[in-house]
Image (cartoon, rainbow, N blue to C red; front, side):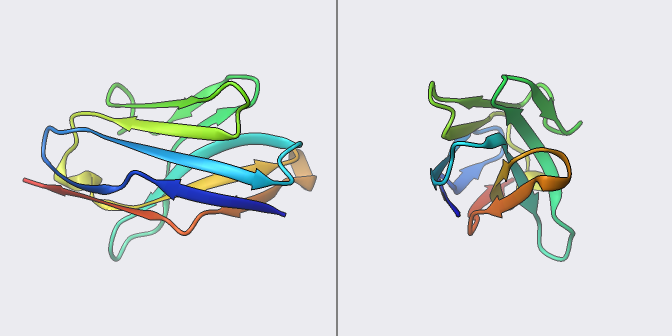
Length: 119
């Protein structure tokens, strides 16, 4: 089992910045990647960014150039630096931890952290 804990959400004005953090604990030996998804009211959860333990990153189109995903040296904590925030970025942000690869991969989710951007 892997436990996932997010932090760093809050309220900010448009154009501002926030930094989210996600820590994985428990059976973390086989983590393949960690990343972020978000869900706005009335909308489906959508991909934001991921980073594999090998260092490969992937971003959604809306995140490119504004958001940066990074991790600490032991790769059990991942950060999402969000700059130039817009009201459309308002959502609950969820951390995802993928353990294993391919058909054997298992996803773990945090409870989410609210990000509110006011215009």
